[in-house]
Length: 112
Image 1: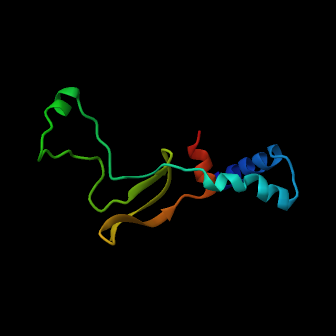
Image 2: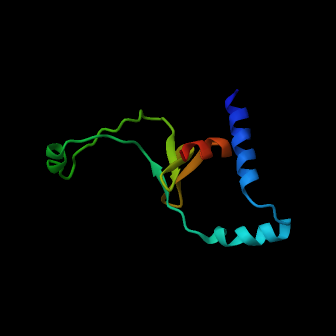
Image 3: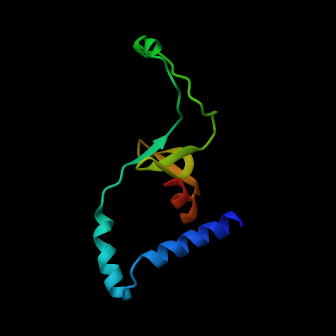
């Protein structure tokens, strides 16, 4: 069985578990979710440090990260990877131009 078939099976299983409602009722029942705040973070990279090294950090210290320069940044929603992209500047603020968005199946799989 391919990953796509497994994802389709999972989506079908979810459909089977959700009670069937008329479209209007279904739209109203999830409408309240549209205002739920989510934490969106963009991850430049990660590293591990010993407490000894952490305590020695000072102004001007450089922390080496696991990502290579030019590698896409991870965009996470509530800690779960949903997309990748590149850093851009928009009106003197940082932003992210998305280059890859995970499919719904991949996002569901990441919740496990």
